[in-house]
Amino acid sequence: MSGFGLDRLVNQKDLNNRLLSALSQEAYCSLQSHLEIVSLAFKQVLFQPQERIPYVYFPTSCLVSLLTVMTDGMAVEVGVVGNEGMAGIPLFLGTDISSFKAIVQIPGEAIRLRADVFKQAIAQVDTLSLWIQRYINLLLIQIAQTSACNSRHTVEQRCCRWLLMMHDSARDDKFELTQEFLAQMLCVRRASVTEVALKLQKMGLLQYNRGKMTICDRQGLEATACECYSLLRAERDRLFS
Image (cartoon, rainbow, N blue to C red; front, side):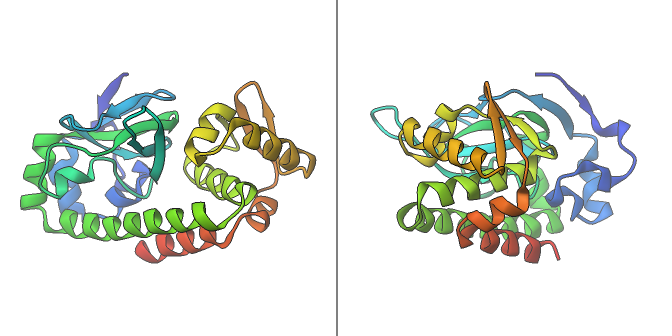
């Protein structure tokens, strides 16, 4: 994983992380010298359950999955973090230890900040705390809506909702995604994901080949997905309106 400081970036809006971009210029400038751009690989683990969180991450072109890990090793996705937020919320809530596993779903770039610097910043920068509080509300809505979605909607609808969320953060129509990993995220059998992927390909909504997913018809995916995606997108847009 490589990184470099943000002295190369002049315009705060170039960050492509909506949480950082929403800060006042004064708040952003107080953080800028501590921020670092890093490239994150597919399935890279950012932090583990019951371990200290070394950094917080503000995704710009990657996507991070938050997983609950069961005693048998099975992991279930409970939330995703894209360029609207940050991974490392427990530090804001007063603990250095995470209950979740954070793993990179879609490789790309993020902006990271050391945990100790972040804790100092939230005590000193009012607007940072304000925006993180708003983002936590959005994340809680996402977790609750995803829980309802998993119990009420079909695998096909859930798959489309998940792919749309990936597409929002990927900044590209093509991204790495194995059927095995998607099955794990949706907590279903791989055979179910294979069946759905084939159906969506026949509908012309996507193409899948050797771990590479291509979104071909976003409007078609939105029409096929359950209402959960549009509800979550509306909440996200309302937060940053």
